[in-house]
Amino acid sequence: MQKLKFIISGGGTGGHIYPAIAIADELKVQFPDCEILFVGAKDKMEMKKVPQAGYQIKVLWISGLQRKLTLSNLLFPVKLIFSMVKSYFILKSFKPNVVIGTGGFASGAVVKTASWIGLPTLIQEQNSYPGITNKWLSKTVDTICVAYENLNSFFPENKIKFTGNPVRQDLLSLTDKKIDALAYFALDATQKTLLVLGGSLGSKKINELIAEKIDLFIQQRYQIIWQTGSLYFEQYSHFNQKGNVKVVSFIDRMDYVYAAADVIISRSGASSVSELCIVGKPVIFIPSPNVAEDHQTQNAKAIANKNGAILIKESELENRFDSVFLDLIANPKEQIRLGTNIHEMARPEATKDIVKEIVQLISKK
Image 1 (cartoon, rainbow, N blue to C red):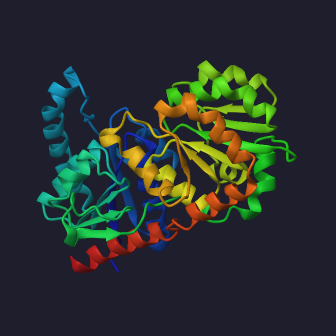
Image 2: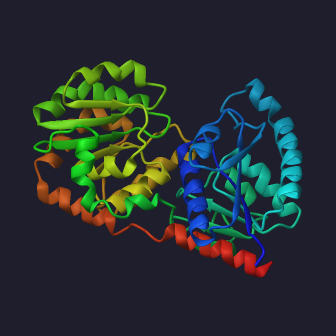
Image 3: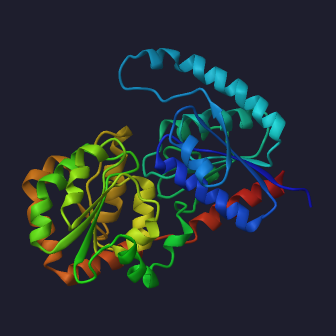
């Protein structure tokens, strides 16, 4: 059998990068001899994270559109054309069997070019409200894997496959990891643990909230693992001097951090939501309002409306946070109910199901 080759592109944020890496890992499980090449955007997060995961990556000169008039916006058409020309040569040289996109402007350039030259293409949309890149690509790609239902108003219905979002496979078995996880983070096994996740780039608003409420958490005998994001770590690292607080820029062992957690405060990016469904712990979602079409709020609502999590908008934090948090930690039955309900929405086979769709495209070629 001919050695299979795949090009995968997705980046800008962890929400695009980690699903792409999860798909690559599953392809390697099913086709150990396959070749995988990533394509990413210059100076973006994927240029570091993809090589760390063990994959080669090619770079495109492209960046996202800003919400205001900037030089970068004026250059966008030039960057897109330049990136599509470079994508053409990458595709012709590598000769992939399938080209896969998980969002971000680099994936737009390479997947669109692949469609135009007749290569099989698949995109994976993580959010309940699709991003601009995937909406643009949907007209020409072969298959669209989605994590939320009722996206036929954005995508051609005949192309949609409801698979769920890819997640790290090490999250599928957390039960036996708690003791090791507590030791890894040097935590006290006699205390409850609050995990704070602000997303891969960090959250200014959540970091300000946690800094303000540190004493409240400690009074309730909660220890804290607080992921600030790289932009904010130096500003809040001094809280590490409090014995009950572990401030980190980034978390490498997500399986351990989820295993250690008893209650979680999190943004509601699509990848985080999908992981938290697998994890099955009580969650307070604080969506970022500063994203396209407010899709984080829609992601969180999809869970909260089924009694799987608590949703607090940023504008409500001052009036609601204390009472919501204190009520939750005082009610173990509610914690179990939320954890059970969110876990019922998990799709642990999502990554395998996406790879099945990729294999279907190979067989149709």
